[in-house]
Image (tube, rainbow, N blue to C red; front, top):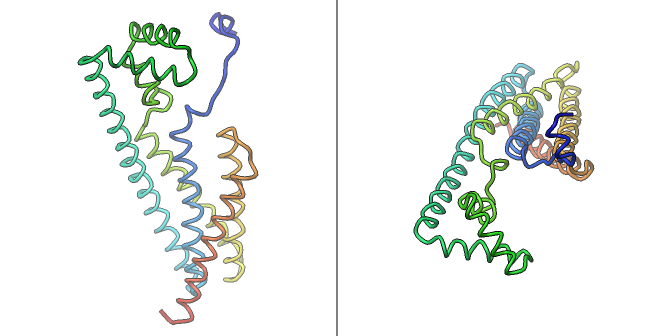
Length: 237
């Protein structure tokens, strides 16, 4: 234990620091499992050859990973743009009318149950220390822990998509076409259950509900895609 640890023995660990990349990673793994499995199941259900199933799966894997990375980067970059614009607006308002901003911060603390005099003292103290950070944190909900990180989100999403998307390929180890189809479904459902448990543990929440949500959603997606593949096979498309 360090000197600073002894000064502050009550240390807590929260999930907010992991919120950005964790959301992207969970979404990527989920999407990788469901989309690649659904694609392979749909192709297999249409009566296509094993090589067609593999080709379709690999094409979906590469395209999906790139799409997830690009989508996350653009989406989170847009969030950064909004945060930057809000920051500039607060800077401008503080420079033009600091008294109004002080009153606004005081009102925020009063609305949270702090007595008026004390709320005014707290707002004054924070304005003397760092008024911009006080407004970003307490008025807009921005902090260094929740700041958007586009590159981190993009990498987490692409990597988790690839890992999740590789799981359905284990189903190809079965000997017959029917067995391969069912094994793809089985290993994907197991992968979804594992992803749900890991995500719940990382977020610090209960395991059962998020895991069931992930498994049922993925199972429904595969069932619908398999039905589409069978319809295509029957209709001769």
